[in-house]
Image (cartoon, rainbow, N blue to C red):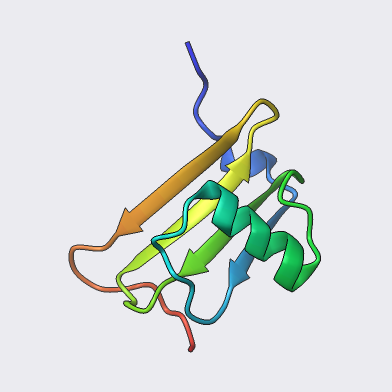
Length: 83
């Protein structure tokens, strides 16, 4: 049985500020991490991406054998991102 992501084990959490095209999948988001921020997407960190709309975001995390892609859409309220 696969284990769920334990957020207490994360080394870092990065919030990628600005507008990210949330149509991108894992490969596109990992490329942004590497090319624009010179960070390693395979590190034990969670990378959060804000879209144009402030009620949704995506996150990726490397679990050692593959990436986890998370998508959150708030039904009421929104994530506080500065654009």
